[in-house]
Image (tube, rainbow, N blue to C red; front, side, top):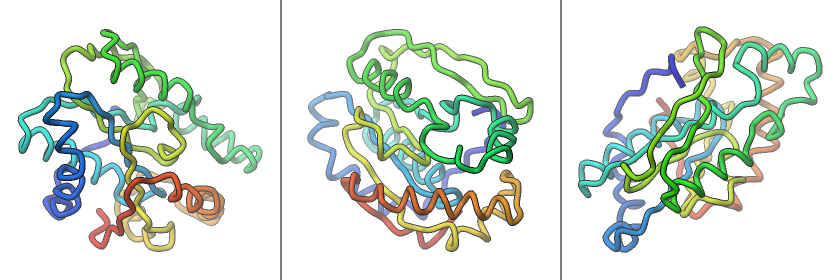
Length: 210
């Protein structure tokens, strides 16, 4: 996503070391893998995913690609919000093209070469495309609200923090539209996403939240 600044947080190193240790045999065997990181809005999933991505590259000398679930929404951010305003029942996994994301991850893992994926420009409220060559990468990380529902990832990490835990972080991030309606949206997402931990290979609690 264009417009979303990524910052490396060393506070995730302990969690990342555990994940890397679990997957080291697959990394060392040169088997291409994909790690999914999921959780509620503001839980730190993007920060954890990026830190994991960086740590794998630095510690194992591999090259990775980071997929963002936000790129796979059917509508750009403001249009998606307006659709929710029209009918809040629209909130949920159906807002995201999970099938396309699964297909792209499968193509990446299978080393199918060039993949043309969607790319959201947040400030412009638009969705374009970008081409990536899977031959250039050794692994991928995918982060997003509903990534636990994906079938393609090799390993799934779920952040347990709820929308109540993450309120201060969302206010600081100032990316989401705050207010009673948005809190209702987050409550609906919470009721959906809290069930997804059963699909995870590993659950973590983000005590830092950033």
